Image (spheres, rainbow, N blue to C red):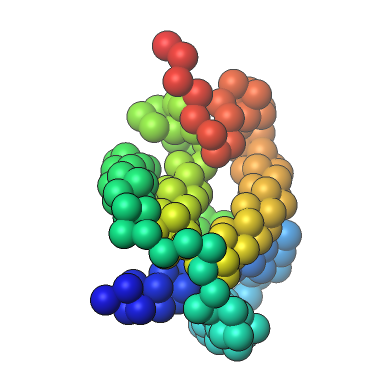
Length: 194
């Protein structure tokens, strides 16, 4: 059972670690993607899947090296899984699948151009990325795999770059309201004061 969980954790962390890279294909070139005929996801999704394969090949030699292997490590992991799922649910409230999938960034004239600053977004600008982080740390903590912790670190570093680019794109799209929101609300680690 532990072997299955570790393999699942490794694969999940590979996929999660590439999410910032997926968005880095979009945000710096959002204007380009909007000018293309048809949906750019016909190019972007296969490229993202290619990243999964590349990262699997790159990390397979280390996929079974563990820092520890205690069953008790799944208790805090379970709490992080639950927290991540709760954050996903909160992030999806009043936010459409089109927005979650980035359609306003890549499709020309996409009608859904709303700046959401209420609910969980009153405390954290990028709650979906916070949920991703909770899930990656949960898998890393539970499995104890070195590769999961390294992939989590990579995702945090790539995510920091991606969030800066996304914030610049959002400020370009929404102007001063987003700039004020950005000053008031932290990117990933939530604000808990009143």
